[in-house]
Length: 389
Image (tube, rainbow, N blue to C red):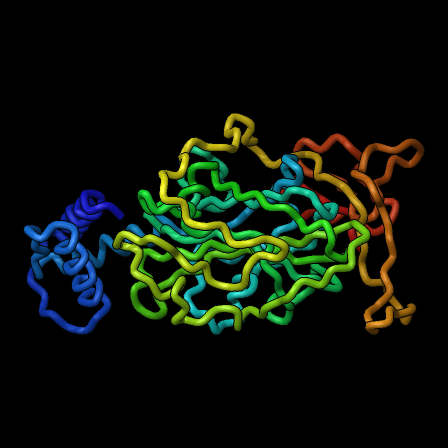
């Protein structure tokens, strides 16, 4: 956060506190914050002095800034077509996970979804982040409060994306953006903000078909100069990939992939940095980009004029595979055999006019079939209902 913006928050906090009274220096969170801010402010402007009687106001200001800047990955685009939040496990809140050892680091807290989005190997997917649930306005920063840090995307092959436990899976990284420029320091989250919360990546062409979880993550580093200060914002999307690949990328676990002392997690970003070490493994099939010594172009590459006011009425289709019920046959690895069903986007049909299994069967503005040839039509959100067993 810039110096002037923080001072403005201090002023507001003083008003809320009805004056900035004297408070003894101690080891409380407020004192810790005060000492960090005093050290930083003196480094930025040696003539400035932060008075001890402003400590409580500074703490309140920090709380205001932090609370206002929380965010959530909420929507998915497939090759530029908006799938809304039909297949994302929305977390219980927009607050971060702050421990690298908790199982919540995999897919956040209490998120579930019965939707599975169909994609092809090689497709371009775009994850979308915003501060408040349901807010897709491009006029607001995706994650504000100067919550600078990297953006990353991982995938994990699973037997059933709807029920897979994130912390039990093996994850491979497919995309990352840390600090693309150091002149001045410019972060992946700033690229996210400049593009209406969108971050686009490519599904590897050679991975095996089947169900996957997609883990989109931001690591906010604004208070990461002490252990436990980094904030992790992630959501998991549920997809089914069609293709003929067989690659098995090297994987990591969550928790386990990060350490609290990793140089990209325990770091003071309130100084000029020439490089930044992105946490986790190198993305599969790519090499890590170097940090540019020239200013990064800040013009949005996402056409925000096309940003929908509501989520779409049509979700892209594609092959779906789900574990078969009953005894069934198994593959060599011992996993349940899979049954291939609908291979294209659902559309109104002749005769009964029923949607196929996993097809869309309702939602605000939906004009297609509202009954299911197989399964029942289940409401996933006001904009999307899907035929599910």
